Structures are given as C-alpha cells and as structure tokens.
Amino acid sequence: MTQVCIVGSPEVELRYELLSRDTAREALSTYRLHKPYANSIAIDTISLGAAVSLMNDLNWYLVRFAQLTLVNEPSVAEDEWLSRKLARAIRDGSVSREQSAAFVHIYGVKDGQLTEPLAVERDGTLPDYDLAEVEETVIVRVTEAEF
Image 1: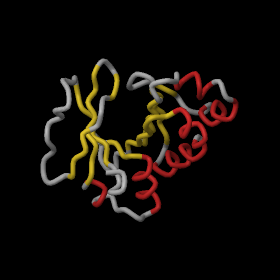
Image 2: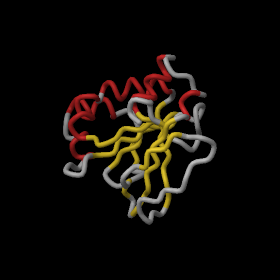
Image 3: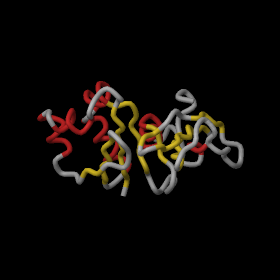
Image 4: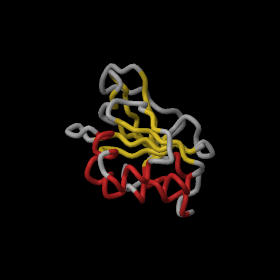
C-alpha cells in the first residue's frame, strides 16, 4: 500500500479547501482519508503509479493549498517518505530506488505539526534533528535539485 500525505499551507484549512471543491472531492471520493499531522490529509493508494496519478489529478489544489506533498512507498523505504518529485522520478525510472536515498530532509514533529526541515546528504547514518526539541522525526527523501 502506497500512502500520499498532503500537508496544508499554514494559512489554509486543507481538508476544507479540498473537500469543498467538486473536482478534488470527486478525485478523493474513493479513498479513505486520515490525518497523520496537523492540517494534513493522508490517502492510501494501491501503488506508486496510482499515488503519482492522484497527485497529478489534484495538482491545481496542491499548488494553491499544500505546503508539502509526500509519498510513502514501502518497496523503496518502509519508514521514510519520498517528495512528490522523487516519487515521480522513481515511477518514471529516471531515479532508481537505490539512488533515492542520497538526499534527505529531516522534519521534526512537535504538537502534531511538521517543523522546519534539516537538509542532509546521507553518508552512512543520519544525524539527529537538532533545530528544535521535537517528539519524533520524519525522514523525506528528496531529489538532488530539491536538496
């Protein structure tokens, strides 16, 4: 199961913005939505291709209302997320699953919200998140250009 997580921009209520519009509501109607972080929506899809397709269908809304869009593909990494651009590159075959681990953003989670990311080029182990005191961390693999 591949999961998409859309994190809303601070100034909007993401769930309202998506579900109040016919096209987005229709695109999401067949999925069960849940909320892993504050002002976010997570959607379980059947594959990486389906996840990328859903993000493409929602692109107009993502550009306007999302701060971050992430994909968790267990065949790449069970406990790490992929940026939207990296998910598309892996799906298209321009980046291999093995190559996807080089660049990461480490987000802290505090009071249910994702904090400022720490950008790290992976060389063995990852450093601890040290930008703030946080409850947990979220690892997001990104493309070299996003890094």
